[in-house]
Image (cartoon, rainbow, N blue to C red):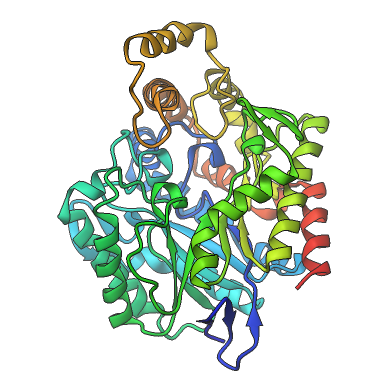
Length: 458
């Protein structure tokens, strides 16, 4: 069943065309603050929780969470919807330690092996996505970055470790028929744009030496929007675009309507998709949207508009024969097909409300929280540094990142970790099991929308 690229399509070994459509398994082997409700970045959160629980009991909780988060029922649900692919984000910390670089942690593969096999039993392919790289390949929390600097591009040491890690991963899964391929660098953010091209050349050569058969899924620079960095079209490669709709963000306006001074409607979505896939269409390579999907608010009127954004995007992808991976499968309520509840929501609900009030994570922020307190700082930056355009998204976003999503988020870490205090082992297991499918609330309108689309198209 191993897939390969043939022109604009993916084919099985016997020549049958395959359009990969499914979800990203965000918040699992690469935890994110808005997905499970913690503040700041994953490593800082784990360190804070370990400081409260101790190493042994922290391992009990986190391993139980990995087990509960995705099991046989989850694979069955995705297959029942008609999905045939799951993109699996992985944090390098599972597979290698900063204190012992280049030494692979065999035990770290156990959950990845388990879920790839579970999905394969249901006829669902996996795309292995290295979402957090040593040194952080982009400027934000989802690469487990505690700062706003992507040090990966500045230090050959980090790049060497990633090549070594991918040689190991590729060798491990080279004969696995239900691994569709490898997405080796999620949303790279090389500010200079000069390092990423030569690094990709090197990485592709190394992975091909270990596994010449599997497809490579390569993200463009600047969070998978800039494909000018590619100096050649590698064989058996899909160039991955990400296609988030402006109106679908937490700060998005009505749809159709204005968001941040831009009119957003179906035509705008199609123009954005055309722009983001220009390279793929010019090179005659497959179209695959590695991430997209709106944020839901709990307001029925707003959420119906968000569902319409999703319907319109799916229709656009269908018209172009594009595959896709919706972000994300499971979380605490912003985007998930299913959402955790039970003991975790009860214990951390008030904390997550505070985090939302402060706008302390990028994905859940409307950019209006704490507006009165931050407005003088934004005015100061605009007045004194009018020409400042920091990479990647400019002065307003960078100021928010530094103050809200780093400073305030890190200040919240002790408060989050303290909520683990006083729990016995059964209590920790109950928290983790809140993410098991049987304990989750299902976002039925979203499930029905996806089921209808997947069963009605091929």
